[in-house]
Length: 123
Image (tube, rainbow, N blue to C red):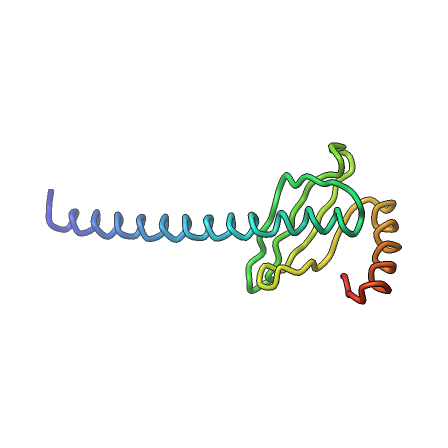
C-alpha cells in the first residue's frame, strides 16, 4: 500500500472515530435528560391532574431552539388518551402540558385551588 493511501486511510479512520464519539456523547446526554425529566412529568400529572401517565416517547430540543425535553405518552393505560409535557432541562420546570380537553379543564380547576392554598405558580 502506498504512503498516500495510508495517510488517507488514517485521516478517514480518525474522522470516523471523532464523529461517532460525538454522536455517542450526544445520545448519552439526551438519555440522561429524559431519565431525569420523566419522574418530574409523572409526578406533575399525578399532582395537578390526578391521573397516572406512562411516557412512551421523547424529544430533546437543541439549546439554540429552546432548552426543553418533550415527553409523549398516554393516560391510565388508554393509548387513545394522548398527553405531552414540556420540561425545561436547565431548570426542570414544567413549561406546558398538552392533552385531551377534559383533562386540561380539570387541571385548571385544581391549579387554581393549589395556587390559592399554597401560593405556587404552575404553568
